[in-house]
Length: 73
Image 1 (cartoon, rainbow, N blue to C red):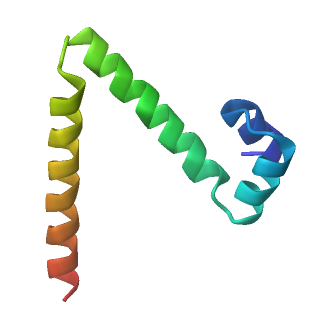
Image 2: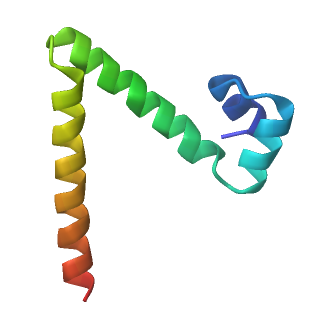
């Protein structure tokens, strides 16, 4: 992905973008924004309580991280 494509997607100021891009986080930020948009769509579509949905996601993420860290050790 080109620098300009990512810039257009995340709509950062030039200064913000230079910081994010130089640190190598531009694609990560773009993916994070897309994930938040997807989460919002799921919450709206299923009329889910946003706090409950996020709590479930955080719990699942913690479980995954714990499993991955225990398999590395």
